[in-house]
Length: 115
Length: 113
Image 1 (cartoon, rainbow over the protein chains, first blue to last red):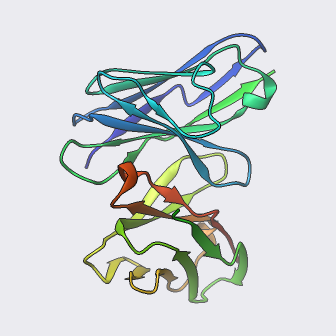
Image 2 (image 1 turned 90 degrees about the vertical axis):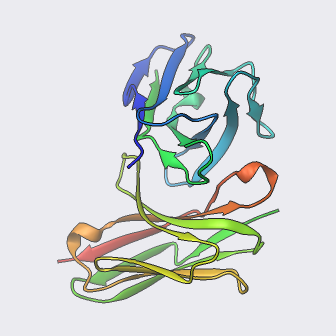
């Protein structure tokens, strides 16, 4: 089946630094990828839709300058948390749609801890 | 606006019991519905995917049903085991609005040995 790889799986950083998370579709092309955020004991909330070759579409309340999304190829989307602060500590998960198939495949997630 | 609700929020059962987890959604215009399992601190594991034209899907001890007209889905787990302990998430993919998947808050299941 389709595989989505997310890296790193866990990252600890100091407050004020930037962290980049990668989401790769390993065996399919994805024109669209999605980024979700999950706080402890809560469900996943969509942050943004990443579109290959164009700007990402952010959900209401998500700061686009804080969470930079780049989808430069059909197999890679990146999420950069800029100037991270402790309140950005969360679980971030990406998903990807194989082109022409309306099924989402999810990455394993990245746990971000900001000290 | 699509909303997904899961009941109960938490459930504790003895090993061997059959159980049902419930998911309801407010807008029947969906493309598919998916059930996931999430272990503490881990990512999502897809359990079952039901397309809008389907009524149910089965995998091993799991059976998921979909009643689109009433906005409901159930996940049936037969002969529960301690290893089934996890959070179960229901997710609905609308067929409008950019196909953005909406997740329920989940049901935390604990199966006692």
